[in-house]
Amino acid sequence: MVVDVVIAVVVVVLMLTAVVAGLSLRVVQQFQQGVVFRFGRVRDEVRGPGLVALMPVADKLRRVNVQIVTLPIPAQEGITRDNVTVRVDAVVYFRVEDPVKAIINVQDYNFAISQVAQTSLRSIIGKSELDDLLANREPINQGLELMIDSPALGWGIEIDRVEIKDVALPESMKRSMSRQAEAERERRARIITADGEYQASARLSEAAAVMSATPAALQLRLLQTVVEVAAEKNSTLVLPFPVELLRFLDSAAETHRRAAGEADSRAAAEDAAPAPGEPAEVPGAEGGTPSVRAAEVHELPPLEEVLGSPPLDVPPVPPLDPPADVPADVPGDAPADSSEGPDGGRGAAAQAARWRGPGGRTTME
Image (tube, rainbow, N blue to C red; front, side, top):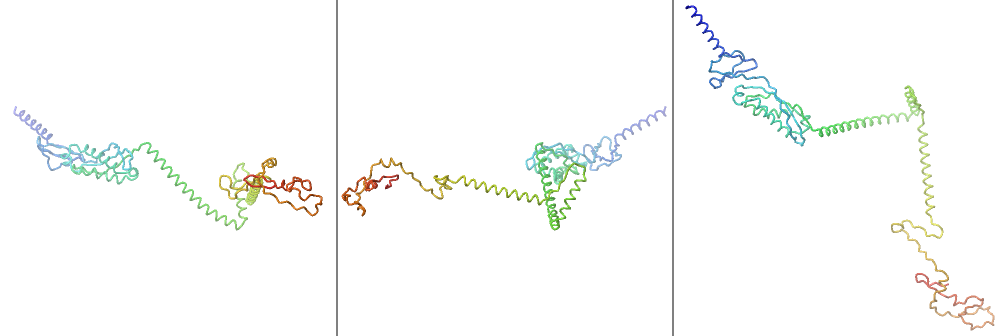
């Protein structure tokens, strides 16, 4: 009977010991650190990895992961300093350096780091240009790391590094950049081609100078070209044509063109010459002040109009002395204004008839 009682007591003690051991012993992993709260007050001593003994009921242990945490930052849309709309996402690598601060100073350090990273990313987008985001990301990553690390120091968080993952551009901007890159490549290709042609022209000039000293070298080069063309199995027929003949034909054609031009000029000059009786055309008389004024040509009125016009007041004509060979029977007092003369013609008065022509000029017939 007594033995049974002793056994029962031993069993109870063992059970109580097991319960107390279960309440007071904790295991901390290698990548963790433990923060002990005794009656709600944090202990300064941080428990390392291994088996940790606690005071039953009084102590409470919180494990903190000290591994590097990879936190992706959601894509943030912003406008760069050169007014380009972009969407940028990044990633943050951090670890807990002080478990006590990470537990006491901030409620959820993962969420806090995420929010700070998003705001810092939007801020860094507005301060940067598009070319820097695409080709010069190292300074941007360092600036973003400093912006996130500033508040994280008070939380016991160490920012390992921050990197921008992707920069999403609008489709119109992508097309513009592709056209710009294509134009730049084309410019470089043209420069390289022009440089090659320049160098080749210099070499060809030197070769021409050498060949000009020995005309047979040009003939040999021509024959070599014929051999190279004939080496291929094709139906091309190459006929050497002397360059001097081409130059002769060119000069002959030029001479023919000049002769034809001179003939056309002479024909045009003959066509432009005035006909007999027509006034000559004065160059420059059309559309401007002529350099030489054309001679005025007045037409005489018809004879009937002249004879039918009233005579003008004519002073009396003195009598004419009879010639020495006039016969004596001719009366000497014959009227001077007789219409019939000694020879049966008109008298002096009739011959002295005047008429007023064009322009008020007096003409004697």
